[in-house]
Amino acid sequence: MPFDQKRINGPESSLLYTQFIDNDNKFQGKNLYSKGKRVDGRERQEHRKHAFLLNTISKAKGSCYIENGNTKIICAVFELREIPRISKYSEKGQIYCDFKYAAFSRRMRKSNDENEEKLMSTNIRTALESTVCLHEFPNYQIDLYVMVLEDDGAVLATAINGSGLAFIDASIQCYGIITSTSASIINGEIFIDPTSEEERLKNDTNKSKSANLTLSSISSMDQIPQVFFHGLADLSLIKSAKEKILDTNKTHVLYFKKLLSNKIANVRA
Amino acid sequence: MTSNIKINLLIDKPKYTADLGDNNYRVFTPGESITEQKDFMRGHGTYVENGEIKSSVVGVVKKINKLISVIPMKSKYTGEIGDVVVGRVTEIQKKRWKIDTNSRLDSVLLISSINLPGGELRRRNAEDEQSMRKLLQEEDLLSAEVQNVFVDGSLSLHTRSLKYGKLSQGILVSVSPSLIKRRKTHFHNLPCGVSIIIGNNGYVWVSPTVNVELEGQGGFTQNLEAVSKTDREMIVRIKNCILALSSCYVMIYDTSIMLAYEESLKYEPKDLLNQDIMYEVGFNAKQRLLMVNQ
Image (cartoon, rainbow over all chains, first blue to last red; front, side):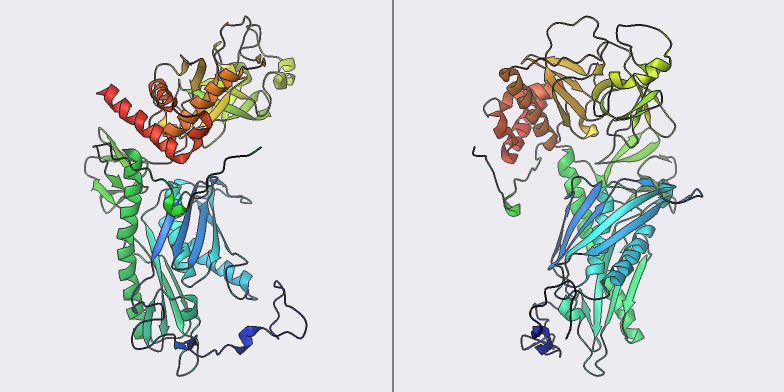
């Protein structure tokens, strides 16, 4: 019986209801995707509604609360401090990222949560190391804490967006605004910004898990600072997914820019 | 005892929109190109790429002759020589105190930069080092002036005047350093019976006006007499006015504080903590300031 150490499991003879859920690509009897739209009414390429709030944590140097559909993530950046346990002088600064899932963020607490958190931290750090002007604070380290309050898909992409905005809110020098989007490749079709149900789908033909691609881009440069790919997919599909993601990132950059400058323009009047 | 709790939904949160200013500053975001590099030098908040100067923070461009820099909204206090600051003692080290002044690094107050009580002029000896704690302890507040700026950006303070020294009774208000206007004097006695010390570092000290200048007040004796209720109400009112001004991003100096005070008279001091009322007081003060300045 699936036994979760960190949850209350009920009497010994009880069974988890999830054992009885039909694991085929159906949710509440509906097909999770069909020739038409997705379950939540979106088109294949449509991104969910998202919003962000800056300076939500007053004690942090910079912070951002970001929502993407039901995915809710909070990121906070703290004051610079000297890199601990280092003997040589380091010419570039460092970023320390601590990524955590809240205990209530997902339906089932996975057994490899810790490894997954470490993997996410590394990804976010890689993405931000290319965005932040590290040469501006040699021998210093910036702490970034990311906490996922609710996981409904596209967590890595939303976390990278939030972290980039938290750095901008902290007035730390950056080369540009980093935006990130996630895509799922299921049965030869590309779904932009998947929900957690869509991320868990399996391919119809060989019942292998679908592929998931997360890509970030920096506004001012033609560079891709971070890629995360998981699963099996055709190379041509991956290429076209990449193009679609880069386009989505470009539109998001315009939206972020407008919001950031409006916020400051209101303040400076 | 009943307390007043006001709960707002996020969608109903009072929004502050400054529709007064006609000068719309052009705000740059990281990665946006400001100009070509040809004749300009780049300052803080910028970087050079492909021969163009681009912004690296979100802020407003400041052009001084040939120097282009971008000033971000949130910045720590960077001191200049001659600034008046209000600070809090964090540490006592050998022959100096470490003071928190809302800057990146703690400021330093050397034992040779203070006035000894009684106004003596002599070399500091070992006994003085041992009795540092009698003068200034951890968590004490003081006002001082910036004497020197070190290479790493930390400040060296001094209290070599009778007007500087340990602060005794009052309220410390913390605002953003970018809202403090540089003036000739930072010590004001407001007509309502309140004295304020506006530190350039964003810390403002509000205290009751002391009528008689005590003798031998070398700055380290504290006046701990009881403060009357009327005085205390006045102090709290001024403090809430300063917070209202800061929430509406109005520059803080004696004129703006007095205008905000006049605008706030129709409310109780505790009502001034209400978000809507704060915005109203700040907005009205701003309007009157514009009229005064025209």
